[in-house]
Length: 443
Image 1 (cartoon, rainbow, N blue to C red):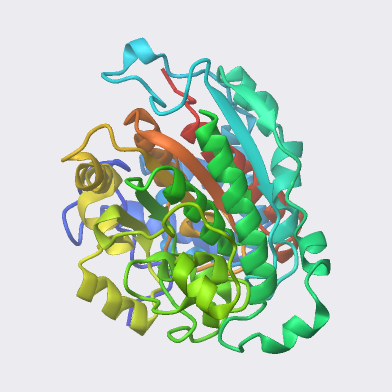
Image 2: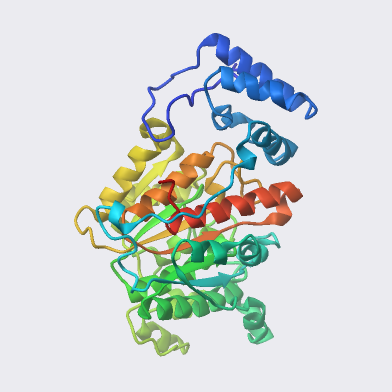
């Protein structure tokens, strides 16, 4: 059996292919494993010696060992010590936008000029069991999101957060008795997502770029519904450790943050009126038959299997796996990222969505749990073996530089599920990913 730190395979560039089974030279690997053992054994080990060993091996700390990504003090405290010890934590993160002149195509070409981003806070917490995701929008703003967007050349329209609690109070108490155990809190989630869908659709029709701040990933029901109503041909890039492809009947938990794609995928749901709070997703005729008409003025939003690409999957339910195979959905797991490199994966993902229609708008949904918990410990469903820091940023940069990005969201930041530094680190990563999506450029 392998020892705890034996498998050190990530030796090539973050964006390039790596031969299967590639290893560090044995003397370097031994030095690195010794260094890591000292990290796990005592946080009082000499940071300078650890950084020196890493430099001697000619590699970055981020390639050390995926098996180390536990949600203990190492992921939030020791990794921060290591970064500061080799100077990384002291680098000023400049907000320099990518110039359209440097690109082959105009960036954000689906947004009217002068380009305006509409920041929509969606502090949803009812799609999963843990309180805390509702603090995500405020913490991202407090970390400097609005000033960063302005520095990147955007006009900023900061909307008030959607008040999901007030929406819940407006629902008659007797209605909660009709909720189903396989769709927990569907009245809160469904009615809240209807408000979000209306807000997103309105901003798109006003020529703005909707930037949605979650909240748990159940908000994807609302954001994606509003996007598809305004732009039915939108292609979707779903960056997530999980497929979120369940329906209530498929779900093993009943948590609705695992259902946004399943509820909107063509052909997976035959009757939306049986889910309290989600009747607005049904065709108008079905709503009238059920006596729940919302007087819809457009066709119900649906996502075709060919219009979505998954990136970063590594924890997929058995029923979801069957649907992905049966519908032929394009899915790149962490195995594919290891095999092709993140650059190869992004080339394939964008070709799938834009190959036949380069002018197609793209929506990117970024679940912070796609990133390895060594970098993003403060999230509810952390799974080790995820994206590295640079892989996470490359995905955002690649979609941004395509010019087709028309809307985006970030979800599942929950600072209450880690220590103080782990929460701060996750928020900082979320802010960095958003600025990479919105045009931050190295050169």
